[in-house]
Length: 422
Image (cartoon, rainbow, N blue to C red; front, top):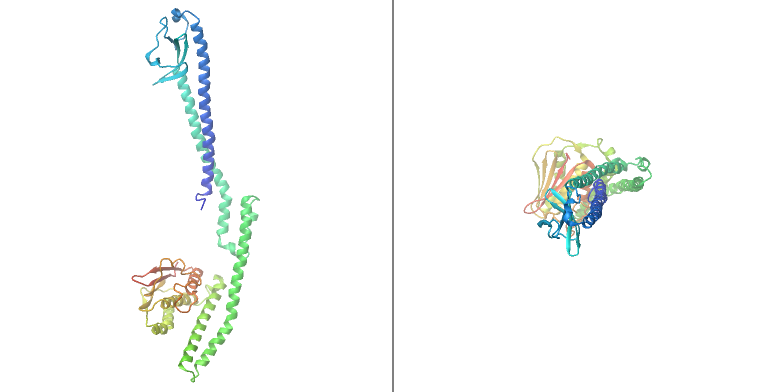
C-alpha cells in the first residue's frame, strides 16, 4: 500500500514539516539580516571615524579622543604599529572572535599605508548571542507547539473517521433494518464517505438476501425429488431379480442421493442463520456423533482396504448442534478416505473438539491457502467430487463459531483439527 502510516501521524508530520520550513526560513533570514545590518552600520561608523583620524596629524593620534574600547593601528611609522594577530587582515570590515573576546576590525589602505580601526565588542557579542539563542529557542518551541497542535487537530479530524470505521465494521450494519450512516455526519468529505458506505452496504444486503433466498428456495425445492429418488432406490433394491451390477449401481444412486440430501439440509440450516438454527436445534455429544460417523463410513473404508479408527484421547461432556457436527465429521472423514490409498484414517476425540488424521497424499504448502475454497480439488484426477466438502466444513465452522486448522503429518498425510470451543 502507498500509505502505511496512520492518518493522524501524517497530519502531525505535515504540521511539523511546515513549521520546520517556515520557522527555519524565518530564523535563518533573521540571522542573516542581523549580520548584514551589523556589518553595514559598523562599516559606516568605522569609515567616518577612521577618516576623521586620518584628517589629522598621526603623531598626535593618542590625543584624538577615542573611547577606551576603540584602538587605532597603522603601518605608518608615525602611528601605533599593527599587532601580529592583525597582520593578515584585509581592507573592509572584518569580525574577529578570539575566545571570549570579539572585535570589529575595519582596514583602509591609502598611499600604500594600512590603517586599522579596532573596536571591542564583547558586550555586543553577548547580546547578539543571546538574540541568536532566543531565535533558536523560538524555533524549537514552534516545532514543539506545531507537534502538539497537530496532534490535537489530528484527533479532532480523525474522530469522525474513526467513528465511521467502528460503525461500518459493526456486524449489525448488514441487518435489513440497520440505520443509514450519512445522516449522522456533516456534508463534508466524511459525510460523502458515509454516504458511499451506505450505498455499498445496501448493495451488500441485497446480495446477501438474494443468496439466502436462493439457497433456501433451492434447498426446499430439492427435498421432494430427493425423497422420490431415495424411496425409489429402496423399492428397487428389494427386487430379487436385480443382477449384482444393477444392485451396485442402485446403491451408488442411493448413496449419491443421501449425500445430496445431506448437503441440502446443511445449506438450508446455514441459510436460516443463527437465530433459527442455534438453541432450538438438536444437541449431540462428540462420542455419539463419532459413533454414527464411524458406522456410516466403515463400509467405504473396508472397500478401500483402509483402517477406520475412532479414539477418545480426552472425554468431553458438551452438547453440540447435531446436524452441523455430523456434517463436519462426515465431510472430513470422506475427504480423508478420498485422498488415502493405503493405511488408516483416525477420528480422535479430545476435550472440546476432535482431529481427523490420515496417511494419504497430504496437502502441499502451496495448496493450504486454497484447500477450503469452493470447488477446489487438491487432485482432480481422483474420481468424482465437486470440491465442496472442505468449503462446507469451513462455512459451518464460521457459522457456529468453531475453529478449523490444517497441519501436515510426517512422513505423509494430513491432520484437520476442529476446536468447538473457539
